[in-house]
Length: 253
Ligand SMILES: [Zn+2]
Ligand SMILES: [Zn+2]
Image (cartoon, rainbow, N blue to C red; front, side, top):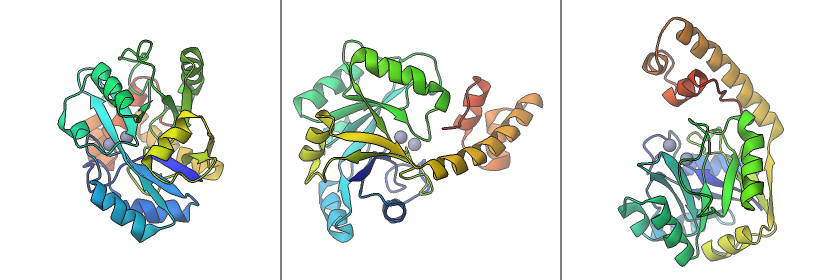
């Protein structure tokens, strides 16, 4: 089954313009079989998760959340757990890691190196179950070093969209060996590495063509001494795109 493990819904992520329904319908259109909604520090209530699974059956939706380690500026995806404590606490990485391990979830380092050249949490000591290697928030030039990092830590990589827009859902995804029957089964399969990573080349190409045009505008703004706020004001686009170009990175994926 094809699954995207990192998607944001407008119901629980203020930064997303796509609702659960928009994402699910787009995912089905793009040939995916399942999604994990990983909203920012917010979990989809279990009852709602069951309802969505009934409504869109055989399409599958599993539990997830994206937790920001606030002091460190790093984001972790927690897959397969539906405990409200996850959204109620201000986690340190060590505490979150221990909690996920104790409760048999799956923890993924999201978009490493997005705004910096290092990882600001102790992943050497607390090795995540996987590291995200492709998404709409991972610069394609960082692929090699993410790969090397995962190899050195002897951990896995995953592909996701980090979709905040239904146009992005499933642009990168994972192909699981079978369809997990529930959250627990999904975690087991991921831990056993019974999947491989894929992306949709034609959509990635189209995405990068759009990014190229955006970056021409960003570079012009930089030349004119304008900032990210100005870029957002004139285009409606996210300031993060501007910040990455300032750093010498690209938003191409
Ligand atoms: Zn977001
Ligand atoms: Zn995200």
